[in-house]
Image (cartoon, rainbow, N blue to C red; front, side, top):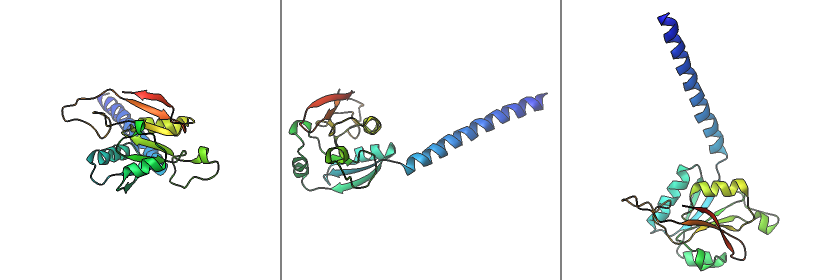
Length: 174
């Protein structure tokens, strides 16, 4: 009887382990193959931008980092209003791919991701595909991804969606 009980427990443990391996390797491999690609423009001297890039990678994104001498010029060239500015600017195709967009300019132009936007909000943007130009976390709020404080302090902040005209709405709050 003791042998049957032990082998039953061992079978359950083996089954649980097999399920865990399947879930981790199966969905992990599928996600890695379909990982969204984001292109990040940042100043070479900005440490918090590098930490935000690490946050994206840790959350399954493929990240292409471009060092930029003038972030102001990039923001101006895409018509990003100053009230939305932060330290880095990223571009993400609406389907998450790395391919160059084509077709209807608005529907195929990349989303703009400005500042310390959490990865989960970028994933939500890709899943829901709202008719917006992008997301922004204006400024550099303490506690946002890449801006974690040693003492654990956090500012309250909003992730804003914005359209072509610069109209904003709260996408999420922290």
